[in-house]
Length: 239
Image (cartoon, rainbow, N blue to C red; front, side, top):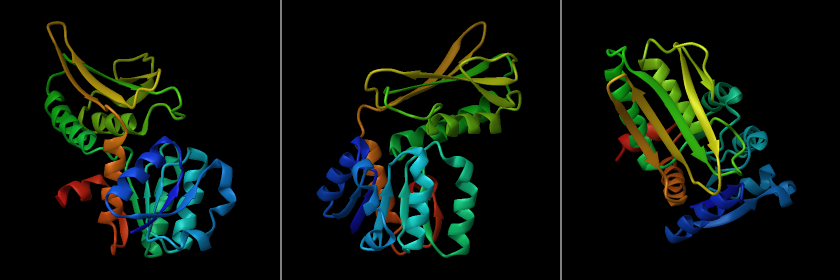
């Protein structure tokens, strides 16, 4: 594949390494220093685009790819107020869009484990549930997209929780998401159920960015010759 990288920070560079190792070609790299090169004409030279940019740029990058008729894999979080508009436009205009808050296969296994456990724990009201996420100091959005995905599933399956709150809660119906930014932590997500007699915890810790980068390339390979909206459930179910 010929790949356009929209965002060439640490994740973009990691994706480049994995892509080359899998015999793909990087034909365009867009970062803060050359945003003017992010044109429909340049993106159209690629078979697929992969966006790990910043929240303020993600939506425009997606629309550029749609206008260029180039499938896009997006891993940028913090812009999801426009998500439904993107999916609707994608479907109406026969485009290809793959989005995930986290491309790690391990994290997506963790998502499924979270849903299974939450469904079970809904029956046991003596347990309170909280969520904690830790990331590097450079991460812009808080909570992380992964934490929001986990929280959404907790709210879906645990009826006694009605909304999430960042760092502090005032009511037992609120789900606390504790957010920590420190050092160069790639990403840690923890879910804890606590009662007066015991604690149940599940946790995912990323050791590096390789899992994320590999998942993004797998997603790019997966959407070749496909139309519509896709996510990691589609990719995982295909394996």
